[in-house]
Length: 445
Picture 1 (cartoon, one colour):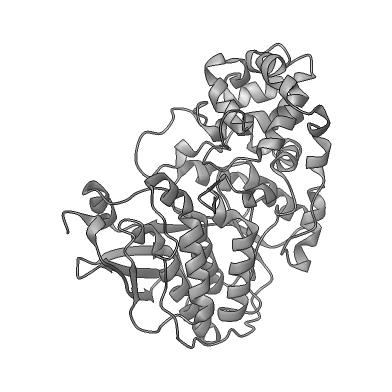
Picture 2 (cartoon, rainbow, N blue to C red):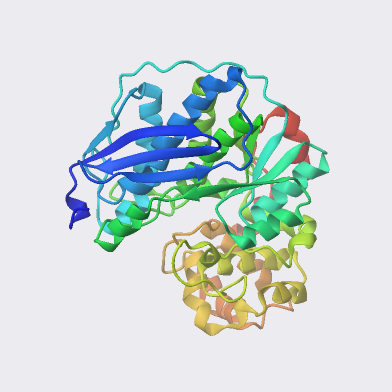
């Protein structure tokens, strides 16, 4: 292993294989040691012959997309794909994913990936067929409020669905069990060599993990026979965190509509014409989703958590389901407050985050007051301001420390006509949800 990973000149996609429910993805830098990742699909059935081409195509896609976890360690200028070369559509998808999905990583590390990320192209990959996949959906579970809302909406129309997740989080497993749906837990084992590279000083930072999980679940759909992978990404995920030197930097890029459209189009053209990839929540704001969760999510109040500190690969995790200090805790608390009785919300979190003056800076960032929106999966500054204004008008909240501070110091600087919650509760029209799941969309209104 090189003593300085950042000096690598090339990144190689070496090979990919699938056998007995295990996908093996192999990478390396220059002529260095192989970095081998394994994705395990439990109790995987024998894939029918008519799906063999789709399986090969989605395995290739997974290999190329999951490589983002390793490429970032050195971000070399040369990318080498061994074997069959990407066609133009594949290279375009990957160029966009690595450039925009790593934009936050680049910003935080003072890098510019524009002109550096260039996947080889020129291959001639086969087109997708119609596979007559069974009409049923994989519903990714993240342990938080958004996926719970999707589960309950899909259950309300009696659609055939399975709750699924990647990794070994006990918190997600508990939430998935509470759904009452069949469950599918897929294992992902990162190469130990990646952690060694980090120890040796590799570049490190945020990756578009939703994109990687999306490719894993698309492969699961082909293996087990599902016609849809239905995520829970709301429309605010498409809004950039900030703009830096002419480039938008969006922490949630792989949860945004641009990526959703690109991946669904790619799956239809290269994997299976009848494999849909979509988000049921795409028409809705974060506030609309939290309102739906307050109405539909009572069975999950004791098991859900959106606190990202629970899902770290390394490092300490909070003793409770909510650390109470991070942007996700701040935002979920603030967004739920207008739609849930105060005692219930305080019971869920175990404390009143809005009556703690030490949390002022965190809430200011959510409001985009003297700071940009946090690099987290949180809603837009304007909807956070609308939620805060709503609470400032309610007797049970208006005397809490941060609400009182908002009324005193921040509200005089805002245009009250722009602070209503109601416009945020109206759905937009854009989405990719297949017709057989439109009833679940209606259940959210």
